Image 1: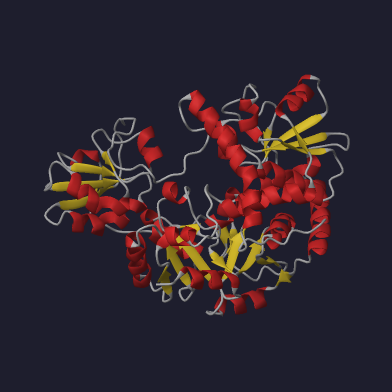
Image 2: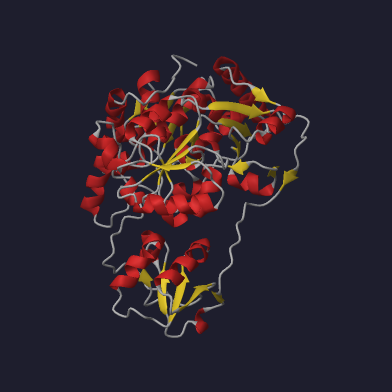
Length: 512
């Protein structure tokens, strides 16, 4: 056990620390420590190696009742982690001692985005003013800085998809000198960060962030588009050269250093310190070919969801791309967030290029298809959202970490056969041994494929706390409207929390 005072001291010293909140995301999003990355019990084994790659890292686990944290501590120690601690009293003890707690997800990045707007006075345009510009045929380009998937879900009319980490890299082929640029996202911070990235890179056009993004657009009574596929193409040779020049100016002003292959090998071989190797290009480019040992972390998402990629505070971060533009722009922000960040100097290409995405293979007794299910009890371990969208008829939804609780609640306490399934095929395999313990007399198997029709909806008496609900997800229009308003207010209010929190400290530059 580690006390609140000891954790405060650990957050303030210079040694590496991974603070991990092991509650499900929905519960985590209600109240958590600013620097705590979310590692739900449901996916702990799958995600820990990426979040905390060094086995001797000092780790502190946080939950509410210490039961889940104790369980995860055992799991991590079985995996080889040697310095795993649990916060005594959990999140309640932290709060009761007067320390700041935050709601929401990806808070370090969201907070940083709000501070960027405050520090740089990033220009913004309202939804109605942008609509007037579109209607008046103003020379204008609207760039959606979210992921391509989010863009396809809904977008501002006339906009094109250009994820935040790609903006400086692709912008010079998109606009002429007299074109106004508007960057949007779903809410606030990715718009702010995208627009300010262009400004910092010296793009001379008028540049604005769309105030409150697609949510603000809807709240203003304007109409979004759905299913669009327009995107900004990869740059021409000339456009790429312009982007490289702009990024090099940012790199020099931000004092970001290159790291050679020889030095990197020394860092990676140093088992006393953590070094994250991240490829900030698009996931498609990464899949085609990437430097061996580097993980995919598209730059815009890395900056806006840093805690989903890196959990070890005090670690070194090495970013790679093909011409330093995207690595530089991402690094310029990560440095101001407090990360010790470097750019991989790949001129000699000393590191092997490999293709494909990372894969994990787990084994458990399997049912090859639905014809073998019979009268088995089917337990769906998908997320609640995935289950609601579609599941095997008759399947019961549950959270992996609560299988023993489910066994106590079932009307049939002794099923003969249990089938585990989930949209993520790794989860049932991970849950296999836990299901065996919960139902020792049952035959437990994992379903490999499901080809039949699916039911929709979610009928359960279990607490649904596995996910943070996006503010525009509720089906009821008025509920969604109130959720969007609440979300936008929450983002702005983060600055006030930052000013109260003695453990929150970013090093924003006055100007770039």
